Length: 340
Image (cartoon, rainbow, N blue to C red; front, side, top):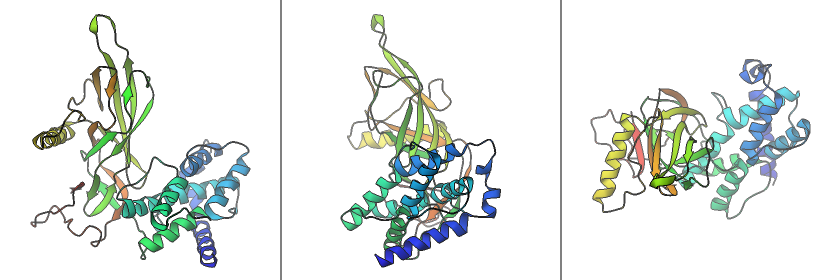
């Protein structure tokens, strides 16, 4: 317990020293038109899975105590900005708590659980590694896990994700004309890691965000029901997102993947082969009530180049990944895509 208290105090000092003072003035979170409630709700959604209720100061105090075991000093705006930076954004010298948690998940589980609350993610990691969830400040618990998994710590590196980088995703839930409506948000899940130049840019479990753009029930004279889905953004390992669409590269990948599945004698019923139908980044499905089944595959590609923070994979973790520009053949473990 004494060691745990030392970690808690060290984390508290780190967040205060790293994200206080001049960083507030430089951060766009200090936009005078931005309400304090907006930033706090976002942090609460990340930590707990949904926004809290009640007075701002009481809610802010709860988040700080759950994260650090104590309240941060400063004004309401300063404390909120420090929380956002520490939890979600990080800086050049210190990755965010979300980034550290994601890397700990990937090292342990070979996937990330970005759809879960931060508390549930840490509980799952501790259950896997230590047999049961632990107690104490959340940030200190993450640091303890990092110290056991990666004694040298976690650092983020700048990664350039090219335009038209293809991602393979799947629907997590079955969509039918009876359980969705126009405007509903839908989250898909990346099924294969994206590694660029030896750095992890996106992992299994990162999300593809989509929206239901049209729902039409079955009509008379045998006219089928319809569900139209538009794809919006892909999520990277650092929590940032980029716009995506179904274009030439993703359609090629879809065709190759379908041919591979077919050659193996497996069913291709779960693979989406239609591509865009009158949409910039989505597709239209017609048929019976069960329109889009859980596990249905979708390939999308990034609309433009992005600069993100990724994780440089140590050679001991992924020894066979080599630079694709090298003359040596690339040996990549199953499920890992290397783009250069």
